[in-house]
View 1: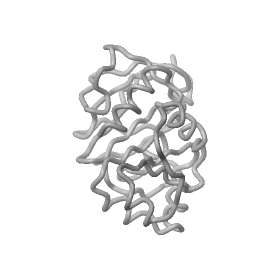
View 2 (view 1 turned 45 degrees about the vertical axis):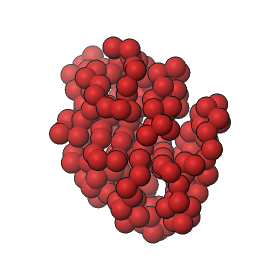
View 3 (view 1 turned 90 degrees about the vertical axis):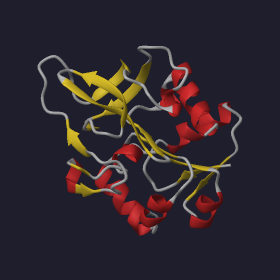
View 4 (view 1 turned 90 degrees about the horizontal axis):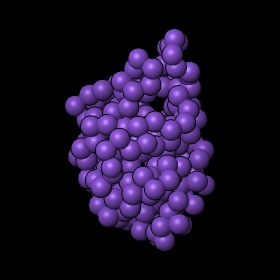
Length: 195
């Protein structure tokens, strides 16, 4: 069973719908005991990193998430708050991934937010296995995690190369939305469910 952490961070319904399409058993919960008993955990999110962290603190889930030794997948803001910190309202984050989250500056040839389909490269993780080279996935974000030793996939938006996916031990993260990324996203979610 997969626990989807419910912490008022938006986009949870589309993650549930994606798991429904895959026939996966899941529970939408903020209950620490349910999270601890789950086989794997998803931390979804759309919205503001500082507010997402505030909600996790209010629910007493920060230490619990850091302590998990089962596969954990952070999606979009869910991945960003697993980093050290974010420039979005000066958020101090969970510190799982050894990188900082920065705001896209103004770019001559690219719009902010980065919204739509874009290809990912340098994919090197069990989470991303079986993806065709140059696969495209769906992004919606104005902030991005910098490249670091935990980077397992990259993406370029304008003049900025950033971490499209991260991995540290049992923790995985995608800046893009696998639940909105068609066949590639389905492959990624199936890979996660098989970890």
